[in-house]
Image (tube, rainbow, N blue to C red):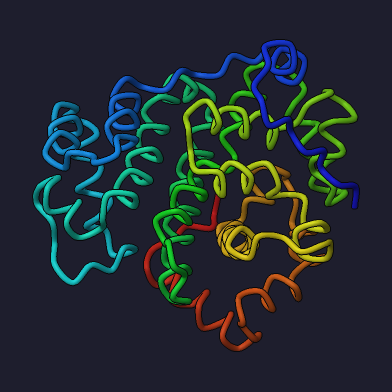
Length: 293
């Protein structure tokens, strides 16, 4: 499988223009700009962060609803942003805020019926990611949630830009070589587009790099040493994608060829055997995840 070219470390205008092929990256909502500025202070003010989030009624409600979902497994329900921050910690709460603000920012891309199903599936993948991460005692399950919701953000942008993108996706998933096929036909790919959007939105480096590399499984699992946290994030994501059937909705395929090719190193990374995987999948299905997209 061909490797995904590593994106540049600087966002030079010429590089962005060439890579994005005319795709417009949605700007980061002002609430996230304000949160980033405050959280970057030497001593962030918790009361100011609570105030910033609370001014956005939609984001406040979404954070409380998400944190109270069974996928986060909190012992007590939260009723306020202050309570959510106390239960999760600042960094984790900001990860969730980023993920939920993304969904709001991309609302204009819902006119296509495929994209309505796409966002339903992304939500399920994100919920599966956080559940798997908690089951496996992964250190930052909220980052797994953010990756689950954000990893394919380039897909709706590509669908809007390229009229034949669905056909290209079908070929890509059929061959099990998603990024090389997209690059061959379109001179760019959804992982790179998603990476640039994640950089513009100032997501943590482990998340931006995981978005860039999430189809580059040869390098992640069989190449030189890779950041272990990043490898675990992508392994969690791949289990969640497989359970939720991303290959069916996006690639119109009955077989998950990525999973077939890299199942063993994925399970090895997560220290799971076949029986433990089956039990985990059963628990995810019992929690109401859909797989009929």
